[in-house]
Image (tube, rainbow, N blue to C red; front, side, top):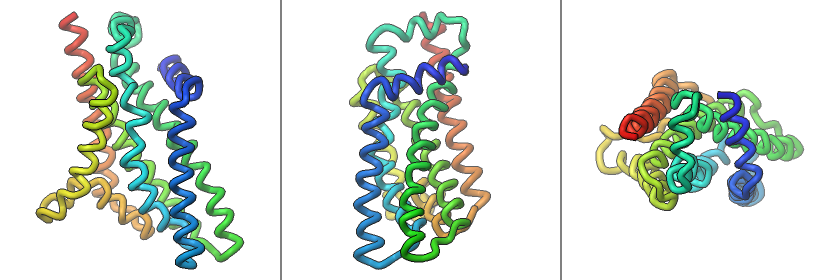
Length: 226
């Protein structure tokens, strides 16, 4: 699995994908940072991640839409399916590599925390809880994005399906409160308040594992058909 992680991680930086993801996120994050700090005179680092979660909704497909669909389109999927590496390790390797890109992006946001330290005293514990929640949200998004990529060889379709699903879960609670427990954004919103909700944390992890398992099943079925 380590070989898959290295290959996928290297691919992100041998192509524009990794740079585009990190660059777009930091550009948009910087804009919201400026608005919150200078326009509203706020030194709450964690509040900026409300906007950061919105950004993540629309740029996660940059990381995930080609993970498996590109393999199918170029024909290299057959090599993966027949390689001695198990399908589980392949899927987990791709998932971990994409997650590492998000971790690097999160580390980059600490420079904003440093800037805020000159203007006030941001709460480090709340900031760390927020980063944890952001990572849980990110891995949920990544796992679904990889699942979407596994069911089509068209990257654009995979990206549209991914964004469409995220937006759907975002707005469903507005139609009926019963959908509150299905909204990933709503679950994340507690973390910037410094709250680690066990139920929401378990939901994030369960959702992530479920999507990874479904991806493995899809790949296994395709392997058996071949």
